[in-house]
Amino acid sequence: MVTGFGYILGLDLATSTFFTLELPVGVRSNYMLSCAEGSGIYLVSADGFHLSVWLHGMMGDNDGAGGWLLVDTFCVRCSAGRDWVWMAQDGDFLGVAAVGDNAEFVFLDYARYGVVLYVHLRSRVVEKVHEQALLDHHFIRPGMNHIPIYPFMMIWPPVFPALKNRRHDQEQ
Image (cartoon, rainbow, N blue to C red; front, side):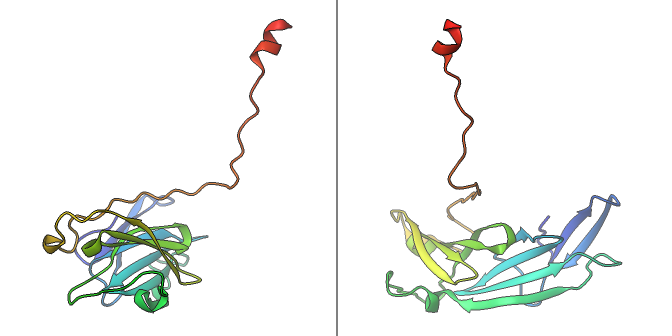
């Protein structure tokens, strides 16, 4: 569970005990967590247009084994390419809206322009996936008026169970 006090509160289900993890240095807000394959937690944070991806391993003799490791950091504006015109102004920021498992991707909310960006974190590909009409962008503040995003993953192509032929079943 994320707290507003600079740490994460966790529950070790094996021992039924609570533990705390301090946030990485410089991270205080505008971040989300993602489970890591095996045992660990990813933390993706945004500071302006700069993304940082952190990994915290959970294996070891004590809670918080290994500490935070900075896995990647990059500028989203530099990775976006020419398909979208950036008109960043002073005080602009990207809000972390959702993070996929294993920190494979992140959805970023650019609230000033009502735009949602998808970033594939390993390849650094940035795509604009949603744009909404602006009501009044002068009053947008950090943490306010963001677009709620709830990603889910599924196999592709989807596999559906075979349908029974009711008419055939009724005739027999």
